Length: 151
Image (tube, rainbow, N blue to C red; front, side, top):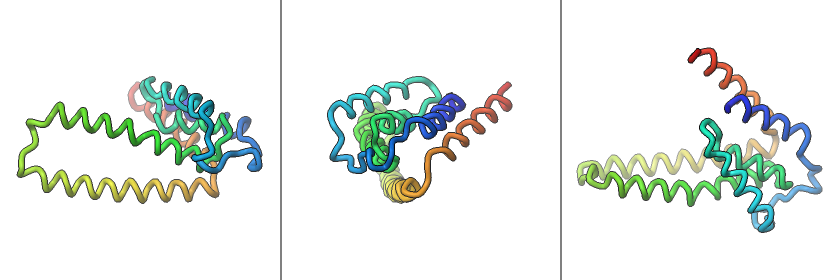
C-alpha cells in the first residue's frame, strides 16, 4: 500500500491538480459536496498501510482544494478521530493510571502537542512552495524497502 499510495500521489500531482485560479485556498470555502467526497476518501484509510492523512489530502486535491488547504482540512479532520481514539484508550486503560504517572503523562502531552503544532506549521509552509511529489517518491522507496526487508 505504501507503493500504491506513492503512485497515487504522483498521478494526482501530474494529472489532477487544477490551475491556481481554480483552486480553493480557504477551508471555510469548502462545500458540503466536497466535504462528502473527502470523507469518502478518508474511508480508504481503513485499508492497512494506507495513510488517513494521505487519503484525505488526495480526496481534497481531487475536489480542487489547494495543497495547503488540503493539508489544513486533513489536519482538522484528524482532531475528532484522534480525540475519540484517545478517549477510548483512556477509558479502556484507566486502571493503569495513578498519581505517580500524572507528571510524566502531562509532560509527554505538552511536548507532543508542541512538536505536532510546529510540525504542522512547517509542513504547511513547505506546501506553499513544493508539491507532494517528494512524498510520493518517499512512499514508493519505503514500500520497496519494506518488501525487500521482509521477503
